[in-house]
Image (spheres, rainbow, N blue to C red):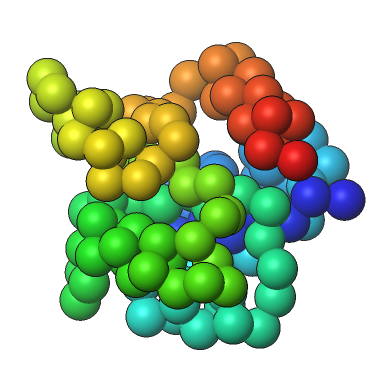
Length: 123
């Protein structure tokens, strides 16, 4: 079974994302902010991380930077999640180390396909 870490501060978005992923058969670990997420990756191995870019305390790009600097977590694929999709954002997130980008609100059909694709290609 694939383990996915979801880093999302909005409770409604978190619930939707977790419910969708669990309905696809994945094991999901939620984290409400970057500090919690960085602790969770020390406790468990993840196959994929979904990372909200707009987080309190530590923004998503800082979380991504810390994940990529750590030998233990640098190879975990990360997909950026954001509600603020501006032109060029996807290229910026990819350049920072994300493998893909999903804008919110989530399109549940393309969401499932993207998750499956990245889990298959990263393993």
